[in-house]
Amino acid sequence: MHDWTFEAIGTAWTISTSTKLPRTLQQKIAKRIEDFDKDYSRFRADSLVTQMSKRAGEYDLPTDARPMIDFYKNLYDITGGQVTPLIGKTIEQAGYDANYSFKSTKLTIPPAWDEALEYNFPKLTTKKPVLLDFGAAGKGYLVDIIGELLSELDDFVINAGGDILIKGKPQTILLENPDDNSLAIGKVEVLNSAFCGSGITKRNWGKYHHVIHPEKLASPTKVKSVWVNTENTMLADGLATALMFASPEKLRQHFEFEYAMIVGEDLKFSKNFKAEFFKG
Image (tube, rainbow, N blue to C red; front, side, top):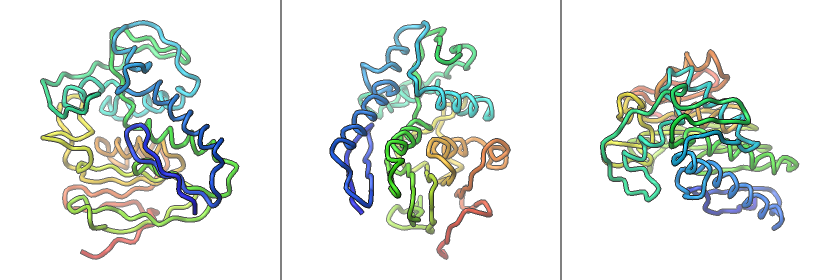
């Protein structure tokens, strides 16, 4: 396999293919990632998201926005607002800001969807300035978009900071031990699907990590790690966050996916999660 590695949207990417990607295709991928980042990043001063944080009003959404925002609205409704793109200002106050200061100030509860937004694609009206955050599913969605650019290939693996999309040959993925990242608790085989993980030991500082409860204003700690295998990376990415708040039984009423979770000291997994777990 030929590995193309690079940094983008604040994380490491590796795209593995049987044949080396042409330079023109690499440039097309880089441009697509840059365009996505300029639209949806809360870390960029020139992004659409940053514009919305400064001025209320009606905005024309990018043509690719609908699947992602529809998914966020769905997760928002299913979890009773616990998964929300309106969490951006709260996460920023916690210290996960554009400067990566990781210094927290007083946190405020984000507004409710209907209080802040009126959504009718392709229009999004912000009733007040709001800082949107698409960290729960945005990276996964971008991986799917890049996967579409590679759709004519027989096989590829896209790994964007642990958000993984696989086509062709099956791949074995190790499941990291949340108590010791030098160890694995098991391994899983993934074929022609997406795989994402999330955990409280990643991107953590002080008493916070990258997921914050919008009402309790605290980072969930009960679920240490979660892994999701499903059809596309946006879904896997978003569900890996949603499982911090909602039970797999509740989410599986709405989505098809397989999962494994470490809740406290207990390992839980779905019947068809194709993993081998190591003893001890």
